[in-house]
Length: 387
Image (cartoon, rainbow, N blue to C red; front, side):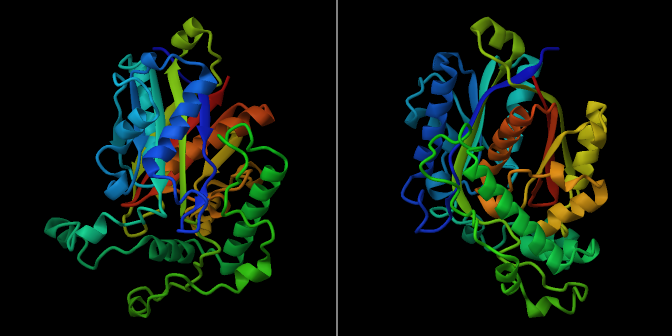
């Protein structure tokens, strides 16, 4: 069975997900198209050889509808013979795209494939699809969860309460995320992965402080939920949550034998994959069983992993995962995460993997583990091995 390897990986900087953001004027199709163009150019690859492009996108409505991945392939000027499909595993959509791409290579269904993702949250706001439907779940789903599920922020509050993660701990973690991201930008550590460096990730706040974070009010307070969830302490704020963003990322994946034939350098191989489901009320905890599962499938332990990327949807989620695993903070999100860098939903999985690859290379490390929480109580986990 042949290995699937990453030959190239690039991303845009993440723009602030608002009408004043630097990428707001860029149509999401064009945003992904520019990323695909850069990926192919950096690899000096004949695009006729690409078997498929698999892209992640969460809000597939409006400008992001009608199979945005295929539209971006055409907008990028790639041959019309190159197909494309768009997948939705919520926040993990482009990590799932990488799973599909790599597993296709391993199975022999693909030789060369691009995994990518995009989200323009300033142009297509979160939950735009739900806004079109009064009853998005249906009666059977409602009968199973008769008390009703809750939004991401309330789930994060429930996680903070269950794992006893204090407001101070969450704010302290957020501060570290900003400081790490700012230091990485200052040191030029993102330069190789970003397709243009005139603009940093807009949400990074190098001048934020513990006092500023502590002054923020709870972002998800709902007094009508206090009786149902008396354990909630309302600790989740805009400061210790991921920021919405506009961005895209892409990875060029192929068989190791194909890379050798084309004279391309394999930079990492896909070692193991896992997906897991968990309680949809807590929603964001499946990263814990997904981490255990991907290690088991890979025949590895936590001690074998050099670097971890756990998507920073909320500080409470990452801290709950860390409580369960005991991973050293010096190995976790070492260049900051979505709290500082931004979280362009469908683009985040590929963005995180791009950053993880470059982190492994810059540190001469071997194994990296990436996991992302997703709506509905699901999570992806992936281990890559630097070559």
